[in-house]
Amino acid sequence: MWTERHRARHAAHLKQMVSRHSVREVAGWLERADPPKSEGATPVLPIVRAIAWHLRVGGGWRALPPGMPPWRTVYGWFRRWLALGLFDRTMRDLARLRRRAAGRRPAPRLAIIDTQTVKCLPVRGPRGYGAAKRVVGRKRVALVDADGNWPAVAVVPASVQDRDALPALDQGKAQWPGLRLAIFDGAFAAERCREWSGLHGMRHEIVGRAPDQKGFAVQPRRWVVERSFGRLAHWGGLLRDRAGRLDVATARIACAAVLAAAEALINPA
Image (cartoon, rainbow, N blue to C red; front, side, top):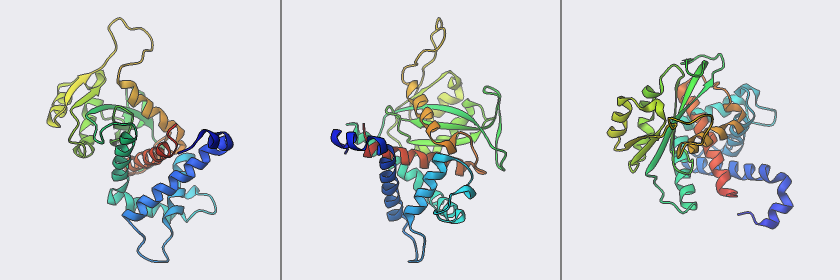
């Protein structure tokens, strides 16, 4: 944990230092979960560093700068960890650790669910036209807890209506059986959404605008998920969806959530 003296001494480089430490921590977790099979394999730390650069700066996998492992090696490890479910597992583990650090019970009881539509680069793979946002791209479906941690996330084409996007969270929600209350906005008021919440053992609550409300106003509870979406803007590689597959698009968000959560644990201020 950083002291005030350390902060004053290293303030100019604190963000870079925390990022390096978080990459090292995440690399250690992934290496323990899936160690290289041979002594000649590329070490895990440079791989995680390259993935973090790709997500933070943006650009294609082929645009990795000199000094980093070959892009095929980096993407191969990324796809391997995706297939093993390590990004989702690590994201859940870090959500529990952050909740403990905040003095909360490890498993949340409150879920706040919302979507974010982003443009999609002209790559192969499912995408659609989101009429509400007038965007051709994909829709991120997020389930966050009361602190903004990411217990579950999914990606669907933007043409999928919000009320039809909830089944994409089935697998993620199944990992959190203790959830008892789900907060939504008015786009999830359909009966099928209430049925989905009931199927997963949660009460369905809509938090919407007051009838006489004019202009912008912070909505109770819902601002937390909006803040979580807003923090994705710090990751240049996530400003637009560039993945050819929906599961890869989901894993890129989960990996960014893992790195951000590790940074928050190392530097909680």
